[in-house]
Image 1 (spheres, rainbow, N blue to C red):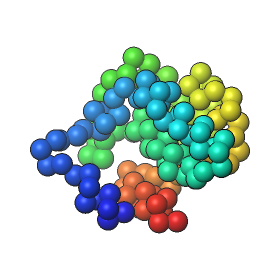
Image 2: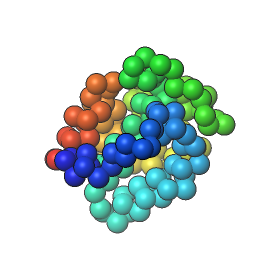
Image 3: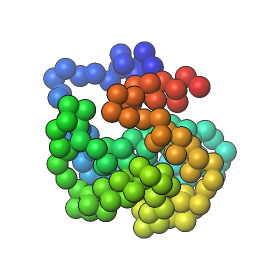
Length: 137
């Protein structure tokens, strides 16, 4: 965790939650989901990938840490917000988006369980603790 904290801060670049979460609809299928599939198919660890996915779901469901509204910035953000809000009560609602995840990820029991675990743990004040739990075992 200390390595991440040392390597990623850039005081000249002020990232907002909206900017960090922008264009998720195109990044997930082109980057995140293929890496997750590859990890699952090759037996490599994928907890961090499930954490990234749960973080995106969390971002779509809430306002910013300071209470500001995170403005929609994806063409299909409304679909993500609806699924993220459903996932508050039924965590698998996010992964059930077959249009985005496909059947292989939506139905993969280990990945679904990992996603649900991280989504339950992560919260407005728990992102750092959740990331530490994932990375530190």
